[in-house]
Image 1 (cartoon, helix red, strand yellow):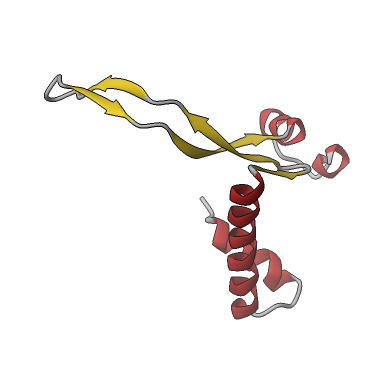
Image 2: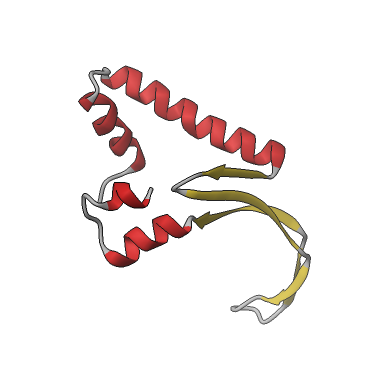
Amino acid sequence: MISNKNLFLDVFRSKGYTKQDAEIIYKDFVDTVVQVTTQFGRLRLPGLGTFDVVKRDARTVIHPTTKEKVVCEARMYPKFTPSSNFKKIVRDGFSKSYLQVL
């Protein structure tokens, strides 16, 4: 398995960037995704998917060990929905023809 950071490093190194440049670009990309998603509630990246901020309502749950009822407060959480093209590529297997789908 390859990490996101290593993926960015590989891509940017193949284009002639240094490791330090790739790390800065990766950090800026992640920071921008988080900032835009939290500020506007949605970020759509065509060909990849959509990041949303979703509200989870307050609810009562039972603690599994103590069996005590606990109230979980309402909160916001991030959600990612892959694009239909991305799902198709994963479902059908990756090949060089994936660029035709995008």
